[in-house]
Every structure is written in structure tokens, then in C-alpha cells.
Length: 257
Length: 256
Ligand SMILES: Nc1ncnc2c1ncn2[C@@H]1O[C@H](COP(=O)(O)OP(=O)(O)OP(=O)(O)O)[C@@H](O)[C@H]1O
Ligand SMILES: [Mg+2]
Image 1 (cartoon, rainbow over the protein chains, first blue to last red):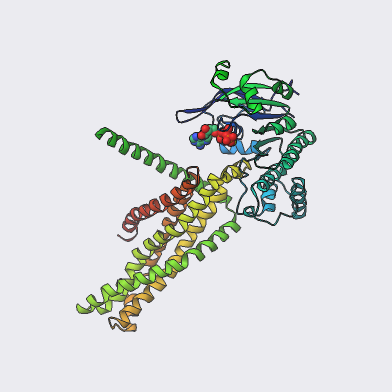
Image 2: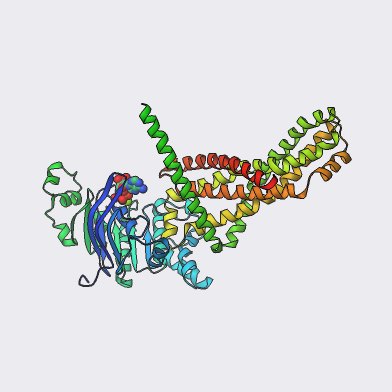
């Protein structure tokens, strides 16, 4: 799958908030049909990468090419065209709190598809079933736990059958069983629908299970990109330390640059 | 020391100008997207807005009409101008007091609610979620609120004028002993329909200010829970200042 043109191609991407540089000229490719996990410690800019790819944040400099089109100068209307084929699972679910769970899942369907009410309801029921939350359609998001909201967010993102799916920490805050279920769901979505997925996570188990390739982000740079076995057997001290859950030491970092 | 003060003031001015520019852009964008309005949502917002603000508006204006009458009636009677009280109260209410006070009350009640609601959506990434689902936040959040307030303000003003004049009459009648016929007649002779229409036009403009400022502050709320609080207070303060300033120019435009 890596011979094809990437769906998303990032070159020399720099993001700075004021004088604070979060991403420092990173290169990253997302190929059709693959799941790429972006791992890294908290606050390194994983969510930022995702926001750039979905047009929520404009790059300070550098190039972002999505499906062959340079998007860094895109306006909201042009982004909206691309976004019809994207699904995003937000880190803190971002469910619309003025709508019921069912209406949250139906939101995109109602806006972008011409479906009858029964078809929409049937889809919503299926999607909620899939994430293990049957019978919640009538509830309000405020009545759900954090983990339940996450899964509704997942159902909402997958409802429009996107071609590119972005998951921001879809398993954070879930119990181990649910973590595995969701990781398998991500894998299954990719295999059945052939979507390209970007999975932001710091849960290594879930990255190993769901991803084809893994990119490690640290201090605003990509330290290593590789297939799951390559990352598992990495000799890079930063990657090794992160996977084994050790604190990163100063000496390790000197070897890197 | 002096330099740092100048710097701070300079920064404030620059930021202020930038914000004014961005607010005007939001206003333009809102006008451009008026056609996207979801009418069901507009009516829902109008109902909410009316129900939330009518009681306080009526209470405020009733009291204002009453005090205004207290202050004028006794003096006017002393000068033998009892027959002018009703008209004076009615004109002052219709042209200035009702639109401005309704604006202030709605800014405090509805403007704050809008800033808090949209601010919460901003900091919990719901606004981002709207954007990635290709639902434009201006069309979806700003436009219905904008239309609802702009349409609802004149309605509030009509009710407020009614209750304000009743308040004025009650005081004039029972406190200063002015006859009901004299009071009513005075309104008929002195006040014109245009006095109230002008007030209604003013109130719509104030409504537009409240909606744009509230939405702008909400959409730009700083992250974190305290960001919502900041956005809310800032929106109320700014709307009220803008209402007073705009009112001066509107008065000249409409009544001079
Ligand atoms: N709007 C913003 N303004 C200023 N700084 C920001 C903004 N958004 C993010 N940052 C900074 O950018 C850095 C990266 O943030 P980001 O949310 O991408 O981290 P992350 O890797 O997703 O972390 P986590 O694992 O905790 O979610 C952080 O240090 C944060 O302080
Ligand atoms: Mg994050």
C-alpha cells in the first residue's frame, strides 16, 4: 500500500503559538488504507497534528497536501468539501450537549445524506450497537460517563462512512476490555472500509494492535517512523524509553540529534 | 515605568482595534450567511429569549415608568403643566428609556447566556466538531441567535412601552392626582407613533450588537473553564458600552 501517493502528505510543517514552537518542520505521510499511529508524551503536539490535517489550525509554515491538493491556503468553504470525507473522534468527545446521543450520531447523516427518518434511525441504532451502547439514543450526553461519551464520539465519526478517520486518544479513560474492543473496532473499520486512519494515542497496547505504522513525536520532531515490529524492536533510546514507560533522560536525547 | 505604561496602553489599543475588526468581520459573515438560517432554530431561540427576558424587562420598565412619573408629575403640577406629564413620560420612554434599558437588560440576560453557551462549546471543542462535520459555526450558531434577537427586541419594546406607561399613569394618578383622561389625552396629543417606531428600530440595532458581541466573545473564549467566565463578563460590559455609544448617534439620526 506504500507505493501509492499518500492521502495526506506533510512536509516541513511548522506550528508555533506565539514564540512557542510546537511542531518543528516535521514530515509525515498517511497512505491509503493504512492506520498510522502517532505516539508521544503529553503536550508534544499530537492533537495539533490532527488539527492541522482537519483544517482546524492553519500551519505557521510548511506544506500539507491532502488527496493531491495543497490545503495550507484553503478557506473554510474549501475545507468543508474535504471534510465531508473525514471523520474525527475528539480527545474529549466534543459531543453536542444540546442534542441527544442519537441526534449526535445522526448529525452528519441528516446534513449530508438524503435518507429517510427510518433509515437514519436504523443507522443510529446499528452504530450505537457497534460501540457497545445500545439503548442510549434517547439519553443526553450529560447523562453518560466519560468513556461512554468517547464511544458515542466514535459512532458519530464513523456514521458518515468517512474515507479518512482521525482518532484523538480514542481509548484514553476506557477500561482494558473496552480499550481492546475499540482498538479492534478501529482495525475492523480500516479493513472493511479500506479507510486511512490517523490514530493519536499514548496507549502502546492499542497502537500495536490497531496500527500498521507508528510515528513517535517528541519535542516537536518525529523521532522515528516505522512498522509496528520496527518500533517494537527500535534501538532509538527515546522510543525505547517511551514504550517501556521509563522517564526520558537527558543523555538519551543527546544521542538523538 | 513610564515606558511600560505606554506599552501596556498601546497594546490594549492595538488589541482593541484588532478585536473591533474581527467583530465587524463576524457581522459581515453573519449577514452573508443569513440565508442559511434554520427557521425552526430561529423560532426556538426567539421563544427562549422572550421567555427569559420578558419578565425582567417588564419589571425594569415598570419601575422606570413609575419613578420617572414621580419625578416629573409633582414638579409639572406645581408649574401648572399637569396636562403634559403623560406625553413627556411616554415620549421619554418610547425614544430613550425603553430601548436603552431593554438593551441593557437583554445584554445582561441573553448576551451573557449566549457568550456562556457558545464559550462552553468552544472550550469543549464542540465548535471544532461542528467545523469538521462541515457545519459552519456562523450559520449554525450565530445566525439563528442574531435573527432571533433582532426580531424579538422590538416586540419586547412594545410590551415594555405599554407597561411603562401604565406605571407612569398609576403614579401620576394616585400620587400627583392627575386625572386619567388628562393623562391619556396628553399622550395622544404629544407623543407620535414614530416615537415608538424609532425606539423599536434602535432596539433592533442594540439586539444586533448584543448578538454579535456575545457570539464573538463566546467563539473566542480562552481555553479552560475560567475562559467561559471571562468571555461572559467581557461580552456584557462591551455590549452595554456599545449600546450607550450607538444610542447617542441613533437618537441624532432618528429624532433630530
Ligand atoms: N491554542 C493554543 N494556544 C497556545 N498553545 C497551544 C494551543 N493549543 C495547543 N497549545 C500548546 O501546544 C502543545 C501541544 O498541544 P497538543 O494538544 O497538541 O498536545 P498533545 O500531544 O495532544 O497532548 P495530550 O497527550 O496531553 O493530549 C502544548 O504544549 C500546548 O500548550
Ligand atoms: Mg491531545
